[in-house]
Image 1 (cartoon, rainbow, N blue to C red):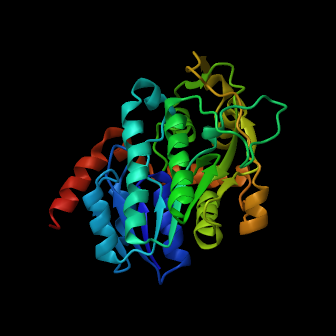
Image 2: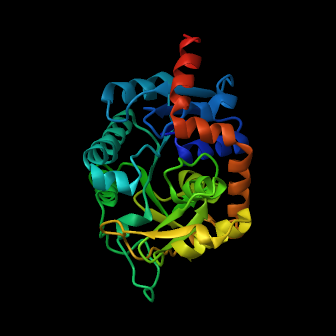
Length: 338
């Protein structure tokens, strides 16, 4: 297979590319990434010299770049991870989310449709479903979409475009919706790496509101497996939910992280809640179990241990990302190879 992965230098995309390279060494993987602040080409250095891996610097909103990449490599299938994904940033400025998450996703589908791509997986989020009360049943694929943030609204819009492309053009697209990911290479604005950094430095750990907002946490490799199964076995036109069967309140998660790090809970501090903060997400992934054979491999404790160990052993990566030095280093590294 010749697989085009968009956003392959981001957190989940990076882990997906590594996992597919390991499981399918005969696949050719083309990584199309704009390299925004969250895209780090340093992540992929071990693959740069391998003949089955190719990097293309480009924007999913650019029809010429997308179409020429598909044509040049003879792409068979597409997995679209590329997205603006941080809720707080979407509250401060929704515009980039509209551009990348809606216009970019639609452009990817259109270019793939015109090229006759055989399989297309659009990676979405559980946040498109809105929020749950504490005693509500978990989200299913039949739950109406009710996004509450600019980020989730932009992802829901892309999901509707995917549905429309299937219904109108019989375009072979599947949608994946996943709960909160954690694992290696996650940008340090997100909860677990942020808390690791602050706890490691003995700084206060800011927890929104009362800390009782609940999320279902999934280790990133389990999510990537779900995307792989959707690519190989998914029924076009369908959406598939993926979760880690690990519902935790934010405050419980932070306490578990501190315990694993051997740090005191006195570091926790509560801060003003963010606007439109959904109370609870939970995923019913019975359809993915039944149709795709999906089952999460890692418990939260196992996944958290692997994640914290990775950050501990990759302090230079973390420091380069925090300081922005990864961008300067990458410009120099790439420029020397032109």
